[in-house]
Image (cartoon, rainbow, N blue to C red; front, side):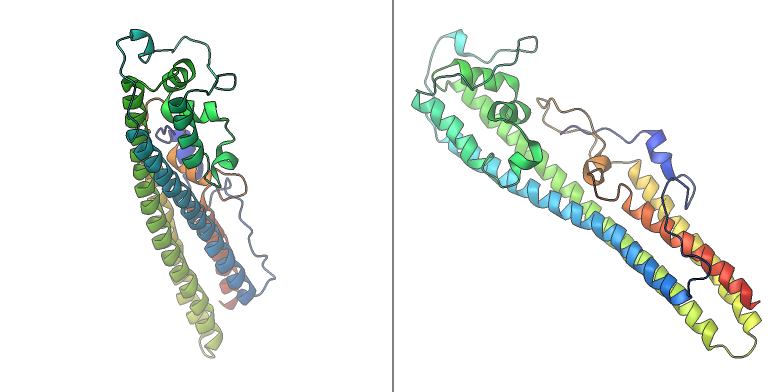
Length: 306
């Protein structure tokens, strides 16, 4: 997969804290504080927790793929290629050549069958692979190893040194690419986990403020003023979390994949991680927007004590 930096327009989707672009479920004024706090904590934890779970799932997939490519590479290395002086078997740049498939090739040669079987029994045998990528054998080989590899395997009856070396190099690139992604995703999981703890701390302090206000029997007006000021500080802290997240979104850890043979269109790293249907596109900003909406509601309710 190829990555590109997040463009300015996308990065500024939430340039203002608690912006209207993030749909927040604000608690109505007539809803009690306890219900409001409970709802916010569920949503705040939920948004970020979903983001963490999505990253963990993708990391598991990548680790499995890396292992499969390593096994495939080891099996290709174990083959003794057929030496030949013919240039016809060398890898060819087929950039302007129509797509070649393996469907109608005669897999009678043992070496040919060995390479194809090795790929099917390793990479394509992963439980998630066909579901996630929805590719045929030829499409998968093209995306992962290159069109020239597909053509060489489909054209030649034997595995020549040039094809074998290309297979080894491209497989290693696939392994390295996934290793880099795993490291970047691990860093994202760590960042989300840290942010989740910070948001939970803000939410806990918000809850304690109302508990303190309810327990105050005298000078509730003064206590309400103190609570109101503290709520403003909490909002400022949440604002800082949002700003920090925006900076992170604008500086993706991976700009492009190391596999230059992949035909996949460029995609932003964070879109790749959090852009799947049914998951929060901006887990942190969504959580901050929800928290900010309820802090504003709290401020309105606290002013009734003044």
